[in-house]
Image 1 (cartoon, rainbow, N blue to C red):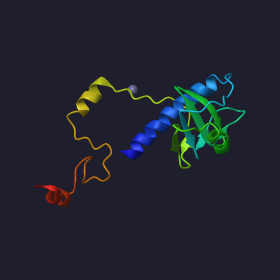
Image 2 (tube, protein in one colour):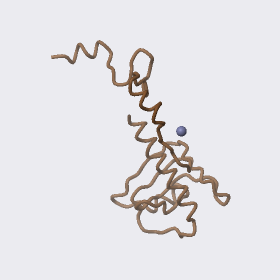
Image 3 (cartoon, rainbow, N blue to C red):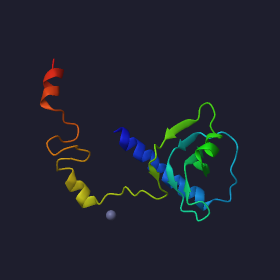
Image 4 (cartoon, rainbow, N blue to C red):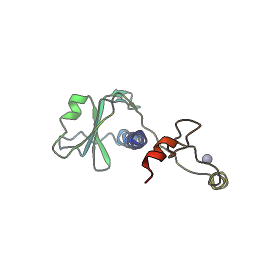
Length: 135
Ligand SMILES: [Zn+2]
C-alpha cells in the first residue's frame, strides 16, 4: 500500500512536471516550497535540461526543477520532503478510465490486483494469522 501511495504521488508529480515545462516562462522563485522531491532521476523532456535530481512544488505548481542542492534551498519548516530514493520520475498523463462492460463484469470476478502470490489474494491472511488473531 505504501508503494502504491508513493507511486501515485510520483505520478502526480510527473503530471505537474509536464505542466511546469509547458509554462517554463515562469522564473524560479526563492520562496519556500510546499513539497520537495529529492534524490530522484527526473526526466524533464526539456532539451535544455533533460535530467534533474529534484523538484519543488508550491500549491499546485512546480516552481523549480534542478539538483538536490538547488531544490533544498527552497525547503523551510513545514515543507514536505519526499525521498524518491533514486526512482525515475517522468512527466506524463495517467489515464485511469474504465470500460463500462468489462469493468462491470470484473466486479463478478475475484480481484487479484495487488496479490503477492497466486495462493493469497489481496487482503487474505495466511491461516496461521487467522488462528492467532481469533478471540
Ligand atoms: Zn480504453
